[in-house]
Length: 142
Image (cartoon, rainbow, N blue to C red; front, side, top):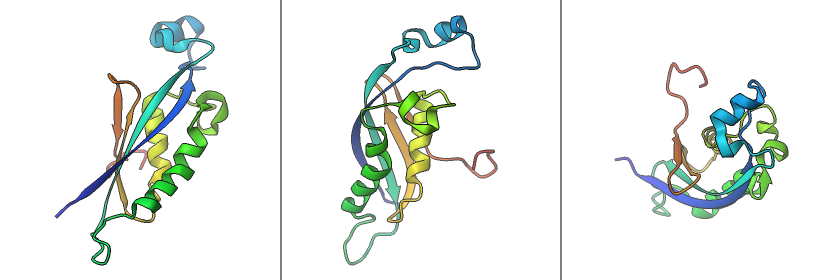
């Protein structure tokens, strides 16, 4: 039997999509209004899905308080109300697309001791969301 727990969290952050590997015209062509020099913000929804054995004493696969405090420490505190390009070391040399943001969140949460992280779903807007479940065996970034 496989049972998964998904918990939702919210955070607000801003970013500018701009690659130092491209000239200004190419950045504007690729990223459009998201290349605004002043950045722009999103109210992100992060869904964290974990799995594990059901503890016979508690009947749970993960203690929600433990998961909440872990996510608060690893995700909410470092990212909420931040300008990702300048305030977050991981994005100083990497374009803070929502794809990259989703993978960064996964990397920060995969060591949660209370259960095994299955995937991260990051909703940027009502029309855009991304899911990341880590690298599979044989993939280069495992």
